[in-house]
Amino acid sequence: MGARIVLFDLGHVVVDWQPIRLYRDLFDTEAEADVFVRDVCNMDWHVHHDRGVSMADNAEPLIAQYPQYETQIRAWRTRWLDMFEGYIPGVPPLMARLEENRVPLFGLSNLPAEVAEETFDAFPMIKLLRDVVVSGEEGVVKPDPRIYEITLARMGNPDPADVLFTDDRENNCAAAEAMGLKAHHFNGAAGFEARLVQEGLL
Image: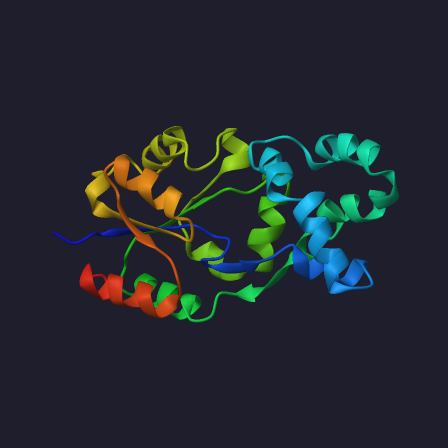
């Protein structure tokens, strides 16, 4: 039986978020920017924002460790939207078609709470989602099973098998499947469209 609800990850699925974009503007060379996002402001550091730690609080120990990079570290918050470059190609039309078909659309994102609203305002297609569960507001990140439990509850406790979740990370998809949801590992709009057709949603 096909799904009847679609649950979207946001970064790398709906919107194109890559911190390197910001840091290309803040360093003289691509190599310097690459090293910075690998060794200083990296995903191991950023995940604390996704768990609810404020960007200001999380910046202080890093600035103490790398005082020469204070401006660049603080830019993670002050120039947050400069990490984005529009929508993932082909996804907004799919969202619009799903909405036209009256398919309930929801979101589940590892995202800092303090930047959620400005991100949603910058990308109006996100407003098509009836609700977005933001990890920073819940204090728990994917792939922890608790965030899927929270999401199902926020969606009105549907049968998990009725929900098709799409995410660019395989471990997040596997965690969703372990909770009984259907999952699609997102690798572009064309593959996702085919899955939506297969599920009878388009």
